[in-house]
Image 1 (cartoon, helix red, strand yellow):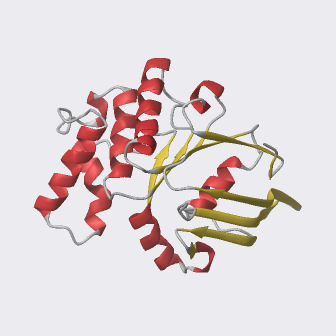
Image 2: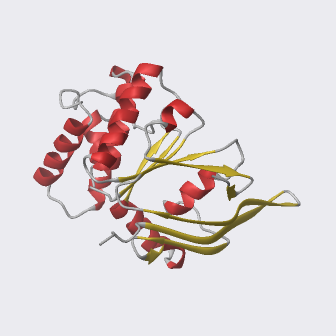
Length: 226
């Protein structure tokens, strides 16, 4: 029996005012994403791919249509409920690593857990597991300025993983990395999907990066074209 989709998008639209101009970022987008898929969103700048990612992740709200994530229409949640839902269900990886410079790698990874009821010992255990998954078990005591860009992005992935979310969203996660570091990061995301059953949704411009995904969707002018 086939699993229920983790993401069900129907007739999703998003428009906003830019000065006096009404801009349509998404225009009637519908799609399903299955648990464990690694879906890549591609398209030119302004095509709506980051807007779609942000709505799925609960960072932005649609103008109309529905975004059902794990059976919940997140557009119906208030801001407090949405913040709780994001912290429990979504891990975020961005182009900029967004690490706090004065904290160690382990302390940065621990941050999302401070919003949970876990004890200090339980938090330390989950942090250690997350750092081990990204190959940085020996770097937990290093601050960001003591690590390479690729290592910092792997810390960011560990932070995204530490709450054990079902969904990981990545917006141009290799944009600031050299080719070797980019390959390492993409291999981790691929492994999380293939081996750990995480659903990964990634925005990228790069066809080489897209090749790591299990499926690619192309957006043009707010619509899925392929």
